[in-house]
Length: 273
Image (cartoon, rainbow, N blue to C red; front, top):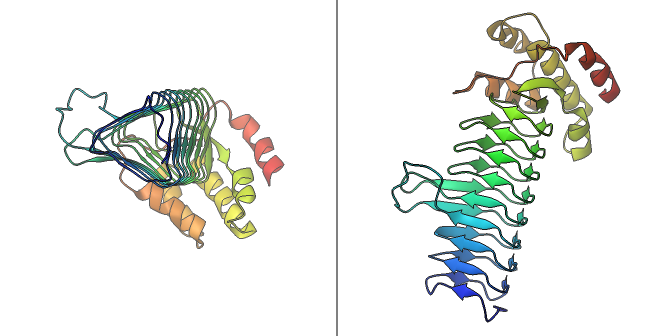
């Protein structure tokens, strides 16, 4: 187990023999480090935190530290980082606020420099949070979502799987799966390119996402009526998932597709079709 002589390791920590711990790393508390993980110089990991196999924690990153929440009283809470996840320079991930609660990142996530994941967030696998992207507390992000640089996500927001959020956004609404969004949560279109590139979805799946976008976010119907109409034609897994999401509990409401950008959306759709 290559542990640099200048690293400070708590006696309670459990570190796999194949992990690589660099210079001036601080591991404080009952931290668990999985096989093949690499912790770069000056990273700080604390609390009841689990780092999965093959993870990379880069210089200056902070994982599992106290949540930035006035309600936190120091009780035991957790942070879990899935296998293969990469956390780049000076990114920060805080553990849960409430006793015995969790902040969880799935497998193969990628957090770029200065990204922040607040307390009690739940990220699926393959999530990408680009430079200076910030998730407030209790945000849920679905598998393979992309949150571009300098984007802020409001607390309790839900971001569906395979969502693409444009850079510099301030998302204050829930964004359903397979959609593209920016600004305050405006739905700009469906993520056709992302769905096709994934190799997971059939042409029928992509078309169902496109139909869902048009019926839910481009019609003049109230959302409740648009959901009712879409439910009549959504028969595949993509349609069913969309319906499940927009019908699910929401503290912020669903993003809207009606806005000043609407005049340009048809051209974007046709380019991706």
